[in-house]
Image 1 (cartoon, protein in one colour):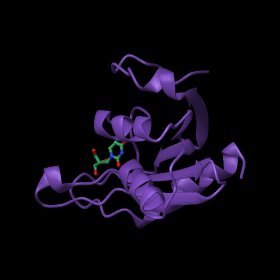
Image 2 (image 1 turned 30 degrees about the vertical axis):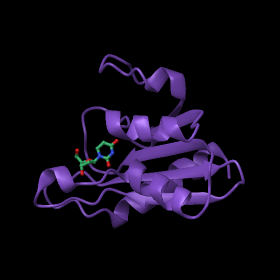
Image 3 (image 1 turned 180 degrees about the vertical axis):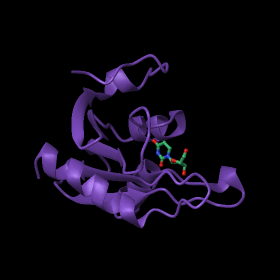
Length: 130
Ligand code: THU
């Protein structure tokens, strides 16, 4: 699966999000070193801290199926947002644990690919690249 297809898959799975509180439907799709693909969407809760991010759902699905290494993860929000969504701190920490090397961020029908090292110390100043 190429980058465009992974980006498309992240957007497709976002349609399954349960996000009645934020109305931010987010999807994630990842590829492991064994070539398998896993997806996830955000699942919110009336108790907001119980919300699970799309990236986390995808990682949990992969690892619980016996995967140990994730190569690349794409994330996409399909609702109108002013800025692209980058994985939150907890998701980044979870992704780091399993060796994610590249992150694809989908925004307004376009996508950009980042090295995980660029995203990990993300300080809210990183820019959506040209
Ligand atoms: N969200 C994700 O699923 N992934 C991210 O990287 C950022 C935020 C979700 C959590 C919540 O359901 C909604 O987006 C708004 O923060």
